[in-house]
Image (cartoon, rainbow over all chains, first blue to last red; front, side, top):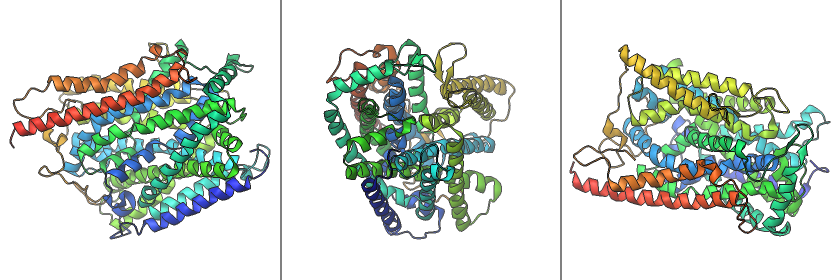
Length: 541
Length: 84
């Protein structure tokens, strides 16, 4: 970024990466695998994870390059608007508390491993199950893309790669390295590696946050100074758009956007395949509720990290690409060796979730598309092979997002994924509480939501690109600017409800529901409830 | 919240209403953006907008814990009441 390679920081960074890689390979010896080639082993770590490992895994999913790079970058760029991530994570926990124990119970009763499994069992609809699986895989891609951008930002700041005027290969080198490391890593070790490394990652992150939150404000003269300087910077009018850069507090016009982004993101989070995998691997339904009482600690961390965006402004960090703001702040403020530690924390913090996400998406494909539609009698070896291959393809998809979308507003990657994944909410959460919705109505609602959401996002222009420039647009009928994902979701629900009435009046076939009401409240120890989920490969229907 | 167990016990009880309120409160507080979109009063130099939301992380954690404890008690009482 600045002047050449930061040797010390790079050395420390590489040291941690190597240490973590060695750990990754040793991970396969941890809780020795019975059969390394089974999908169960590679994709769910043998399902032997207890409360604490699950907690780390779930925390690892939620707090990623999104937390460390994208959110502070959004604050750096526009101020208050980027802080919606804090209410978003606050709202996640009451939702988890309410919905996920029911999903745990029914899944453990019937051997469901993915949301698609549940939807098919509940509504007796392969089409709806396919829609949910495809959406999960698609929505995961931009989320992984965000992680790649995070790793790239760190490498960029350390001086690996070049400026705008260098050869394209050198310029994109950090991205290609990030991609290569991630791919090699997931392919060889599966979910075991990320689970073990999550401990290292979280420890590193806690150390870096503690230091950053105490050391940087002191060096910058306290929060008064920081907010005063940030306030001035936001008030500066941008000559290109003739609007101020941002604000310390959202104005009237921004409040709808703020609230809808928070709510939409919260509803979307636990629909992602990787969040579901982590939840279902917990030992009992109570563990999930207990976890919701400790997980919010992560939100506090997110809030503190978000404030780094203001600190970057106060410290005089000037970068054209906002994603580089925090890594650059670390490089400016910390001694080189500690900057290296911080970069390793960000890098590993992006790598682990990206691996978990691509594994979850790959499992979804293998179980609900490959086994259901392509090869019904696949052997465990074939399944593992397909999963590994798909985990690579998912990352190639992520790379495509990075290369075609505007990297300077990385938070949009996550919000785009949210627009899609939210459309599976009515089938999943609706299905957890009632069988009233008609399967065809759910499918139609999903389709309308997906088409509207994608079209609306396509239509958003930003100063740097014509399409997919943002995730908020005018809400039809209300006239305020809101998160497209939430608007599409409301549309989805309306279509689903109306069509359900119509289809019921027409007496359209409802499909077979293989679950019964008591399945949704069953806990470990009850009759017919397996603490362990069945093998991913094993057919349950 | 509405996980009705089979039997003669009522689905809606005072305990369950409290649980529902504990879980709903963060939504009301956080989505009502205009109630906290202001700079004053500052806390340690941090504008109200930011420290208020951070405070809600702690408040919502406490609320979720209360809901969890109440729910556990509710379930235990019910299990004792209807023998399988």
